Amino acid sequence: MGQLNMTNLQVKSIDDDLYESLGRRAAMENRSISQEVVSILKAYLSMPSSLNKKVNQQFLDLCGSWQGDESAESMVEDIRKSRTKIAKHRDVRF
Image (cartoon, rainbow, N blue to C red):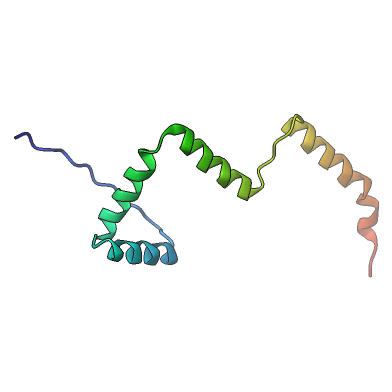
């Protein structure tokens, strides 16, 4: 039988809470944390792309992503204009 080549993946600076969650999840499945991470990645990457898009859109919806016809440059210009209009109030002391 041919030997299967395996590549290593190292993850640095992982949040302690996430690591503990991975550990609990791995323990429930009788897996090591490394095995659990591989399992999670395989499950996510094996989802149909339409489901990935749905999951990604749900994430963006939670993040309050902006959707509109106005360009970023136009929005920045409007913000800058509004700042100059109220600049005269910067010297007000309370």
